[in-house]
Image (cartoon, rainbow, N blue to C red; front, top):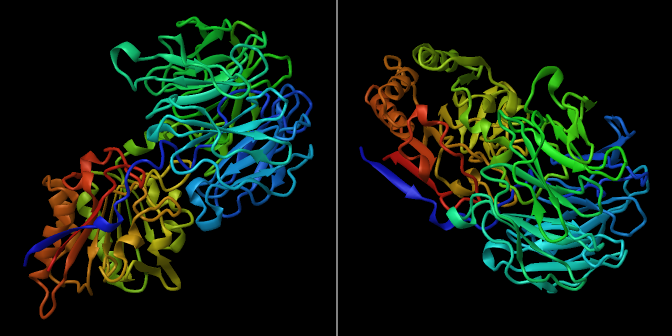
Length: 594
C-alpha cells in the first residue's frame, strides 16, 4: 500500500476576512452608548449569536443591573453579523445596529440594519444602509459631525488604511464611498472612537501595541474630526497598551474629553488610565485599579451610576464555573481611580455563546479566550450501543492511553455530545475516540441518535465564547472520511458557516467500509503509536495499516484530514494555536492508504 496526500487547493481560504471574530461585538469605546432607556445611566446588553438571535438588556439602577431574562429583541444578530449600539435617531435612547459585511450572501451583503429603542424594548429591524463595511473592514459607532445622532464608521485596515463614514439622518445612514481618512488603521492595530478634544465631535484613535517593534511599540495615534473628515494623524502617547492588553475609551475624570484605559487581565488584573489633555494623553504608569478583570474576562466601559464619569465593568462570562458563571462586576470612577473590587452588579448575564456588544469588533478573538487552546490534556470516548465491539474499541484505546492522559468521561454516544452540547462533552477534551456505524460525514452514535458531522464544529472557534478545546478526533467507523463529492466543503469552515475544523487539528477515520479484526486492536495500537512519539496523523495511518494486515478479504483504507500547520503534530503539542478560515495557513489536507 501507499499513502497519498491531497490539498483542498480549490477551497483554501486566505487571511483578510478578519482580524475580527464573529464572537466579538462592535462598540468597545465608551459610555453613553448603552443607555437604552435614556435615564442617563449606561446599561448592559448581550446578543445571542445562535439561531434564536435574542437580545437581552439589564438596566442600571445606579448600584446594580436589574433583570436577567428581559428580552428586548428576539431575532437580531446571529452567526457572523457584527452588532453595535448607539443613539442613531438622537432621541436620547441608545439603539442597536448590525453589520452584515460578507456574511450576507447576494442582496444582503454589506447591509446595515437598525432597531430603535422604545425605552423598554427594540422596535422592528430596518435597513439603514445597503452597501457599507465589507470583507475584513472594522465597523464602529460615533457621532462624527456632532449633531447628536450617532453615525457609523468602517476601517478598511490591511487593504488600504482607508476610513469611511456614513452619517445618520435619523432614519438611515447616508453615504457609501465617503472617505474621511486614507491612511489610518492597518494590520492588527486596535482602532477606537472617542471625543478626545472635547469639541462634541468624535475622533478616531489607533493603538499600535506590539505591531511595530522598537520605535513604534506602544504608540497611540489620534486623528481629530473636522465634522466632514479627519485631520492629520498625530501621536498622543508613546508607551501605552502592550502585548495582549485590552484598550478601551471613556471620560474617566468627567472633564468632557475622552481618555484611554488598558486592562492587563491575566493574573495581574491591573488597570491603567491616561487622561486626555485635549492634545495628548498624559500618564503611562498611572494605575487606577490593581485587582480587576482577570484571565479572559471581558472588560467594558460605561457611566453606570450617571455621575458623568465613565466606570469599568467586567463580565465573568464562561471563565468561571458554578456560582461565578455569568457574574458582572463594576468599579466606579472617583475621577482619579476606580473603587471597588468585588462589587457584583449582576449574577447571571451574558453566558455561553452570548457576547456583550461593547466588546470590540477590532480585537482578534484569541485575546478573549486564549486559555482554551492550552486545554487540560484529557480525552473522552463515545460508543454506539448498537454493537458490543464499538464499546470494546473505545475501551481498548482508553485502557492504553489513560496512563498518559486522564479520561474525562466515556459514555454511550448521543447526538448532543457532538453537536448541541458539544462544549460540555466532545469539545471539553483535547482528544476524542468515537466508535459507531458511519457513513460519509455521518455517524450513528446510538439507536435513533444520528449525527450529521457537517452540522458540527469543534475546537476553540466552534462557538462565540471560544470554549471549544478539541484538537484530535478518531472515528473507529465506516466511511466517515470518504472522499466522495465535496469532501472539503463538508469539513472546512467558511465566513458564513462553521464546520468540524473550527479549531480542530486532525480527524482520523476510514475512506471505506471498516472491518474490525478479531485479533488486532486498532484503538490500542493507535494509543501506543501516540505514546511512542508518532504524529497524530501518522499514528493513525500506521495503526490502520497494521490492522488491515489482520483483516481477510477486505482492504481497510485508513484516512486522515488535517490542517497543514498540524501535519507533524504529536499529541503533547495540542496547545499549538488553533486555525480557522481567516488564517492564511488554513489549508485542509487529506492523506490515506490506497
